[in-house]
Image (cartoon, rainbow, N blue to C red):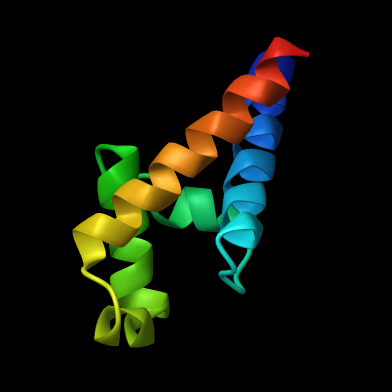
Length: 85
């Protein structure tokens, strides 16, 4: 991976983990998590797949699509802030 891709992935992971924390979700993603779901075509689908596979208990209280979109939107807020700096 080149330096630009590394910086992008660092910012992406930081934004995801900030979003999880901000939403009170007690999980963290690593590069291995991103790699595991690399074959999933878009980010909302990737988040949904993660929730369904590793955090399915959340589906007792939340619709998967709603929760994935909420996480995605919050992640984007943090990502934009990180990239702007």
